[in-house]
Length: 80
Image (cartoon, rainbow, N blue to C red; front, side):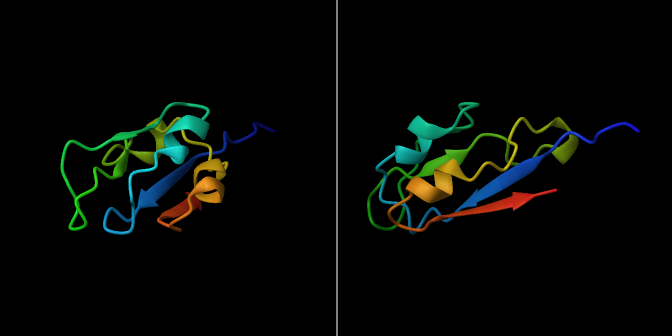
């Protein structure tokens, strides 16, 4: 029986993010970066780099480290 590789993805609420970038530092696959756009509070929010590509190509495993360190509770983690 073949084992299915775990896949996940995250959603970052840009308007809740205050730009501390703790999530960027803990992501084991370096899938979070800094946006070049400002949110309504004037911060450059974190962005998920795999946004918009098929789940089968995701490197994210849904480990949730990013969500655990986020002081603003701006990250939701999904696993498939």
